[in-house]
Image (tube, rainbow, N blue to C red):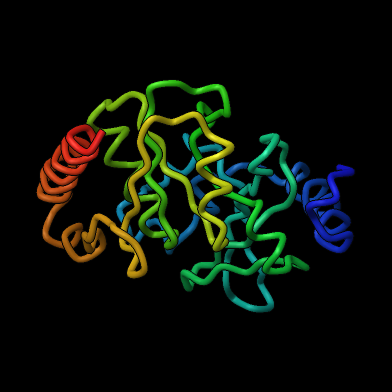
Length: 209
């Protein structure tokens, strides 16, 4: 990890975190994320996603460690700690570092994709629920990316996706859908609403082009 886009503290701590996370076991029946469980991402789903979970007995709270990758190369840089209280903790990451970091839990996402759609989210609940919907609907070439930076042109430049959709952003044209609230009504209703808005927005993008 010698890329100078990232600060030295970010790279150093990222290496330490990677070493720590690699030694952890994936989630199992005795250790799982309660915050994801509340979203309907059940224990079997969590294990399937190969998530790494750690329970801190002193703090009485658990955390899922999620990978953050370099936008320009796809290399793993660091991990974020997504806690059972639905808070994200980043370690030694500056605002400049964040502009070049993205998180995805889909192992098939790469920089070499063509004819694909990226859904950009800024909330981890949206990331997990969107991935669950896409998986349930067997949708191909649609990927969800968590991005906390502000340089969205960097995202456009580094991925070859034909379409970009933003989910629940206030400062740009966006799909506005409260996934968590609709999920409380039922996952079936959430799938139908999500698919309807996805088709509608992709059609609008196609018409613009």
